[in-house]
Image 1: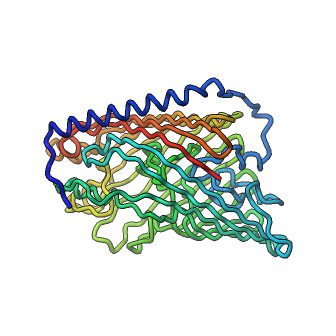
Image 2: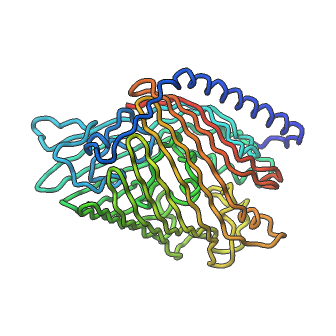
Length: 451
């Protein structure tokens, strides 16, 4: 399965070739989008003229945000879910047969194809690829005896990587687990029930920690700000309780705390208190996980955060900030022996027995949602705790701050079809994996059809 080691000269030639291919692709992409640039509409709305709730939850173009499913107001997946259930289901829902007057359902999805060049993982030899992904979304709701009962689902369809990977060193071999992708993945699947201002859900759902208002164009959400892609999980599995009197929304849930079913008895508490309104939102969140479990190695997974948003017409300005605790709880685990996925940012080092690594981070996001374009400009920083001695190279690499910028542009050609591009830029890290420089550049261009 392994390949023979490549020489520095061949790696350099291949790197230059891929950079030139990426540059040519970006140039062609920008030229294609420029033909329609004059059609952009920077219309400005008044904050005094708030649109109806149904208009907010049913944009002209299907959104790429993982929180923008065909929405039922009592569900916890929509930032504006603090309002009681409307009398009639929101747009996109289909009424049931006459024999079931209180029953409605929906079905939709997205299919996308794209090219990605991620120079951060150039040392693996898997930085450049074409790929396809799909998203299937469905739900049903029934009102009975003052209760609103619902089921929501979101299934990801993923294209796996070829198995013939470069594994000529223990370091490269350990990173192969990062590319082990399930073709069929449960993104969300939960049962929900509402009565008045009270709502409960059990299953796998969007985390109630914080709020975000940017689109994603990959099923693994790595086209996100640093604190979202590296710290805050996009999904949690567990039991959620929500109380939303008036403008307030209070969430509390007990979850596994990890990506999938738990491998131990440890559980996480996730909670948020906030105000969620169509034109503004503000909240504070916490996630804290106990340290008792049956695995050989445990990982710290705690953070406290703030989020805020203000919206004016097609413009949305939002921000999140967190205090983060991470790292391995016990010493003695070589990084190359990790089988559950390596961190590109050395967040899986140990800082002493049962002693977390801490850090603080934030991002600011400006988004525009117009009739022809969806645009996003994002910048954020993460400042990790400074640990280790000069001889402890992995700990010193972990201590390097991250400065990440993101630019996304999507051109809506019809109400269902869009083309998009993503550019991620962050600081380089010298003497990283394979003793090479981790180059902080990542580009995507592709197309998406939504229904």
